[in-house]
Length: 292
Image (cartoon, rainbow, N blue to C red):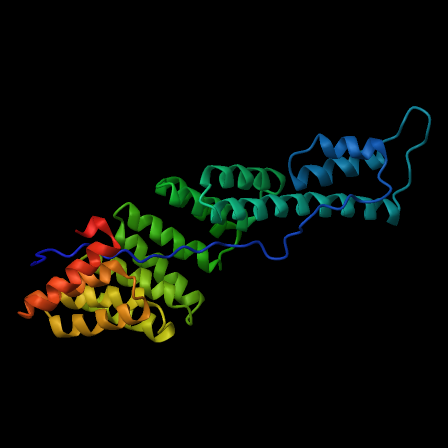
């Protein structure tokens, strides 16, 4: 059956940003008296902890003279700060687990708590942005990516995923700009080229798309999505033999890549190979009923 129109290619990038060195449990700092513990409980951020604990340690009481600052006091403050940061990292770790299970709202709540404890935690903003992105809330995701980049101007993943969120809003030039920045930050990562190629394809600039997909394939030759996307670009340019060749490779890498069968069916039809086209159409329908 002739397929007159190909479905748009969507580059399936699902990156879960993991917090580096996140603790699995929070260890309470030893020898912290009840007064200091109360000061910690009343705070919401790491900077608040530092200010309030320092003030608590140095404040005079009705029965004692103001204590002289000691190495022990400084050590106590540092232990409390370490605990607050560890708590923040634990919330990110739990949030990532929820994210992997598709529980995006629960993940966002965990990332919220991590940010409340440490407002300078770039990874927490990055991961919360990913969760919003997967809920289809692209503009909110962009705001979180903006903050992550503000905190870490060399954050490759934040630029990459902000670009994808811009694509979700149809702002492909912004995607190209962010993908280009991601590529500059990590020349050996094919995801930036794939995202930029998708933006060019969405703008109808298929030669530029092919150039970027080719770079992505060179950097990650085992990613069938790159071949599928480049095959789609060749199809749009009327280069059906090249399209079939790329889609063959995509299917070889992933025999269950339903969209690749549907795309190859369309290219084969254009080449007059209706019998092979029908077989691919049937296979695509078998794998994904939405392609029937």
